[in-house]
Length: 193
Image (cartoon, rainbow, N blue to C red; front, side, top):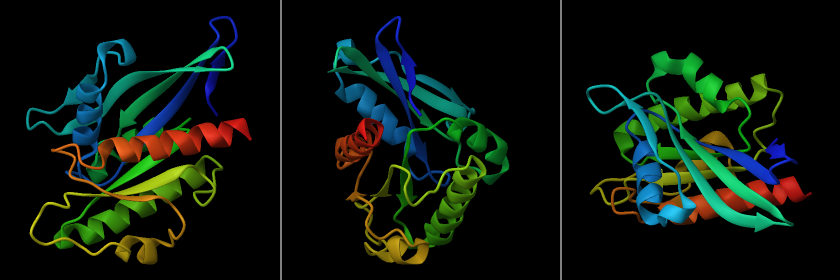
């Protein structure tokens, strides 16, 4: 549920980029930050290890304009992908209004993609949320590599039929803003119901 400040006439939604390690979550958010005009974005906060892996989370506030006299903000977070940070991922997912699941398209990473989504599903369910009705989009990242898993594999393996799916090359920005638009649209649509 979004945070609504009636005094400040502001609605803040929480979007989380979730996926296995090295799938491109931070790369997506970094591209979003670079693409937006300074008047629409806040400062990006990155808490990385010395190997440039997300240690706790990345955070980017984005101002999107107004809905019925309220300014709308999306607070975008990434979670660390490493399995030993499960408690951190669960904590960051708390209060989320929507999730972009970023899958690594390399065939060697298929099992990690599946395990990561199972953890996402378990975490959502622990908060009493049905992942089937929760605003969720799937991004197949790294589509520029010579060998990639075919579209549809994850949807079949995970029972994700009917959710928006995007191909992306986050380092080049391909598919990144389309993923964000679809997710934010689903989140706002759910809120207005």
